Image 1 (cartoon, helix red, strand yellow):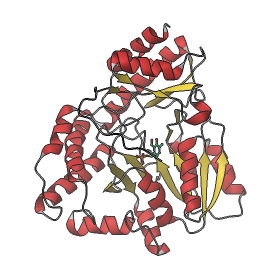
Image 2 (image 1 turned 180 degrees about the vertical axis):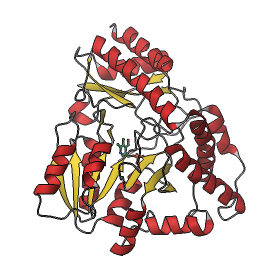
Image 3 (image 1 turned 90 degrees about the vertical axis):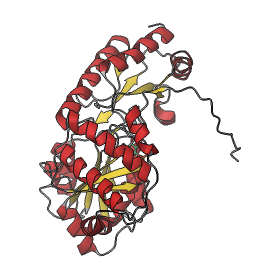
Amino acid sequence: MTEKREYRDDYDDKTLYIPGPTEVREDVIEAMTESTFGHRMDRMTDLYTTIVEDTKEFLGTDNDVVILTASGTEFWEASTLNLVDENILVPTCGSFSERHANVAERLGKNVDRLEYEWGDAVKPEDVREALESSDKHYDVVATVMNESSTGVRNPVEEIGDVVAEYPDTYFVVDAVSALGGDYVDIDAHDIDVLFASSQKAFAMPPGLAVCVVSEDAYDREVEKGTSSWYGGFRRTIDYYDRKGQTHSTPAIPIMLAYRKQMKHMLDEGHRARDERHREMMEYVHDWADEHFAMFPEEGYESQTVACIENTRDIDVAATIEQVSEEYDMAFSNGYGSQLGEATFRIGHMGEHTVESIEALTDAIEDVADL
Ligand SMILES: Cc1ncc(COP(=O)(O)O)c(C=O)c1O
């Protein structure tokens, strides 16, 4: 039984270095305080068409973009319901890819896993081998771009090129903790569905899920005949085409924040954001090499979430607690019981810079006496 813990008015603000939510600019927070308006007003059409079209421009995609009040989890479920009749192939390399497989199982689909050790990356040649050697037809191959539990960045571009050789197999990418901080050319690599959450490298408040949908994926849902209602591609995209709005009442304040932040993202640009995140990744990588070791397979380190192996056997939980107390900074332990104390994670995403990340690593050095 969970007891009520009364929310207070006096929490200390912590600078967030967890793998999301991450820091949000002040003007983006302020954008949420506009007075309420109706979701069927023209003002809503202005807001929704602005955020959808700006997102397409930022990502450089000709595909459709759907933005819904939900978290990224919605599109594990919706993409499965919209595209999969029977078989789905899910390469699993950590907790989130495993959860994607689990969602599909719960929806009654036949899930074949291509299993990797935690810390290892999915290899395109293994996906080709799995598709070639199976006597089943897979409706979908689903791959996580950034496995947030292990800090691995999977080569979704090359995997997309492999899946593209199988015209009736659709490629779904969970880019929840990568998009906005790691460049991906969605159209060039035939990624049919790619989704993310607002609270990660987009550096927005939580509460919106963004999904990029190819024309082929839309047609597949139409041909299949059954789909998710809330996250159905046809329903959401047709509604946008007819009215420039969402099919049900959205979290308008978060969309106002989205609008503000997406303008900042457009000013910076997809490539420049990628470059800034690469610099943060390289900085953390060097720091980890000096004091600990990177956990992921070499060459596959995430640009937004560093998973660092606790080679010095520091007390991870106590260090996190003390850094929080003394420096008002929050970073994360390893994921789950398997990696909890064996690793720790730093989210270097969104609006962070090498300088702001350095402030955290200095604090860890001080507290852990490195
Ligand atoms: C890779 C990945 N996929 C999916 C999710 C679930 O996202 P959300 O909590 O926004 O639904 C997360 C959350 O951390 C994630 O890191």
